[in-house]
Length: 518
Image (tube, rainbow, N blue to C red; front, side, top):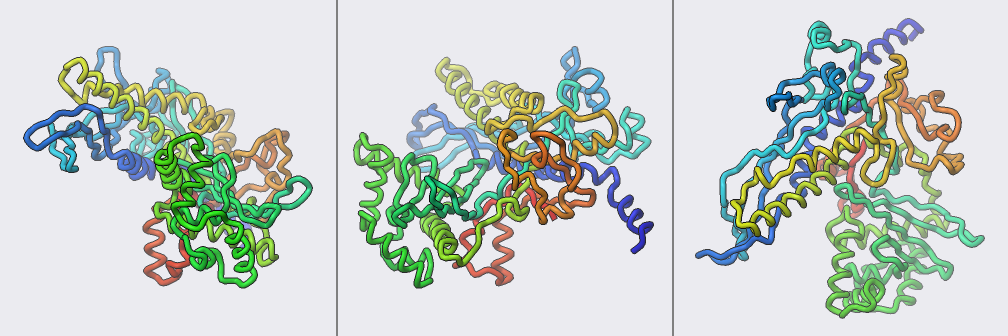
């Protein structure tokens, strides 16, 4: 293929539709599926308001249904709402946002679990959502070049940003390590090397780092944030339900050398049964509390805070068994260290993923406020109405504040930035930027270097000088980015094709939140 052919290919590919396509695809996925999945996670509100009738005792609760996004509107001085275009929002210093409507129904929930409707299903406005320009809910969506000029827009503008108080804000793509994937490395500590296996367990925006390491005496230990002290590996396995020696060894490996190491671990373990293991963990978690409370607390921590992306305890035991196997394989030289800079081990959080994190936290605050408003109205003997129980500014203000300031949930700053408009190339560059979460103050030489797997994905020359060098990057010209899919459908497809036997597929419970470069 000669130079002319390549230039034709590049021009046909790198059009205005492709510049911010990754942001638009991600935000559209959030509008169509992401928001509804967050509503389904919450499912409803259970209040303390109760009573009794011929069916028995009940408590009032609110069930949620479908969420719907309207089209961007602006409130006028007379209180009416008018359809708004981005050019008007810029000139009048307004927010380019659309109303959100959620189906709700007041229910009586009886002790037997039966639910009886207390009223009709209401579609209530719960707040406003900032809308990305050129997304499916934008008023510019589907307009021709002539129609765009009529409403005051540049036909060459790619979209992919928001308008908050008249200013254009872009959400920068965040680069992070892949969640729910095992990474094993050597760590330098006190002058000696330690083998450590790590995983960042992620479910519904809740992220927990889990570590399995071999201590100085050659014994496996597990640590995670909910328990401040390290836990003996075999003790934790027995607490999870694998009590027998054979079951524990089989969950780790069948290799004779690794089996030898595991027998040493089992000999060092103080407990023999699940009850003893839970009691020992209880003394570490809540040493001064009563035994019943300790037991409840340990069970809650295991189910909620330990490997939250897995629901079954036996699956959790097998997963940390895989982590232990990875540690011993590295120790025995059977495998190399995992390369954290390899792009297969990274995920990109695009605008839709970051908006999902923000919406999840903001909606949880709205639910908490709704519960308070309903209970306060009941105490004052007022009629319970869902429309009056919602203060829409609770949700709206949190969304707008994060986009306006760039201060995101999880303590991250600079996620949203004012769009660079000094020239067209600068705008394109800003819409295709990637940011690393690593500290700018540290050297991180390997993270800043070009990695072979970035070829064709990341531009090798476009990065700033100074402390941001290598940590702020840009997409290459012809990159394609996939939008995250539901891991359940992915696993079902693999199993139906017979590619992965279920016995070795524990790791596939990984959430696919984030995006991959291809």
